[in-house]
Image (cartoon, rainbow, N blue to C red; front, side, top):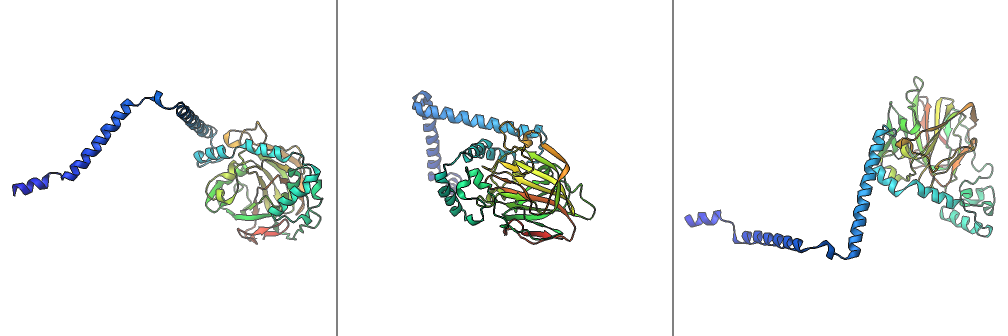
Length: 369
């Protein structure tokens, strides 16, 4: 009986051997570490280690300073994840868009224009019969991107109590801004602050009984890139928000908050039949150039501008006499593709005639009361 108790209380021989083996391995590792000398490591590996450590320390310092900057200026864009935004800035810096913009302005020899633009049109299924001028008349890719169309290529639907599409685009999302300081969908899955995006809260200034609606329209590289008026509207103010140039593809918009609130954009504020109307042209990766037909002084993605969410100022311009636009009238455009967001006031009877995923063209009905 004593022997049985002894066997029960003592660890098995196999367990003892395993523990002893692990201890022996640790002792061997410690001895090897004592004999190891940094000077014996190959010079190239030492240099790579120094560089890697230096880059990691510098990056960590810059990220910390970026977070401090957003906190100090009061987080005007209501950014929910400065860490994610920092790494997106690293991947999609503003300078890259400037370089691509400069490259897009390079004059193309006349002999190459038809073949180059024709290849681009074939790749993105562009109907060249709609283009007003011959392909060889566009001196650069930027000229081709903001091409004009022949008359009546985009007939405008008559909707006295509604809106027509201001662009050729895909409807990403639409909905209602239901409360003050609201966050609404970029696409399903991620949000942004309406107040930060527009520079004011439209719910605070709406008329009694009215509703604030919004719709997001995405322009692909092959779309017609000019922006038109969605209704009869009088523009009284324009705001330019210097910001990032992050991609506005759905795969990113549904995963990362605040893309619209930190990206470069131009917001036009005015009045239409049912109250306030805001038309926002949002820049994107490689799309830093936004232009207005009625304001040639507007310059976007300038070298020394400071992003608004990092403490930069919002550039604002008033139009005292108002810019009166009829439905379908030309407003401006993009170089390459990007996004247009409409945030506007409507009666409670307003109904959407489109749904997320629909493809629309300039002049087609978006919704009406």
